[in-house]
Length: 138
Image (cartoon, rainbow, N blue to C red):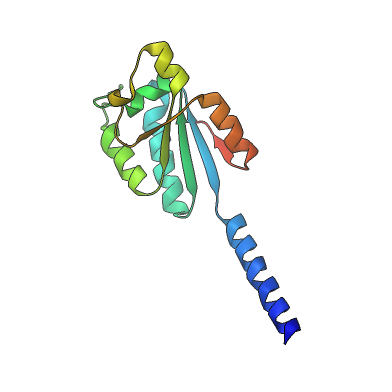
């Protein structure tokens, strides 16, 4: 009986480990909203369509933070606020670099409600990569 319990526990742990490995963890790095917002948000949408279980974190810094501000428009004049809200509803995390905010004189209240904040965008990207996140820069 003890042997059966041990085998069952081993099987459960093996299944859990396999499931954890199967789930993708990805960081998307945006540092220029004007050239990256349109294609990057589309890539994330396509990524989730192909793998709905993927855990995606978007880290924005420098001019990349602009895409997380209400009313932001680039040459495509797309409605990024609606796209960000839709992706947030699918589990995507959107993070803004506080170093950038300080350097550009921004306040947290100036960003979309979906935005979260991280002290340093580059440190955050490096830490996520150290945790096994795949790195994508649109």
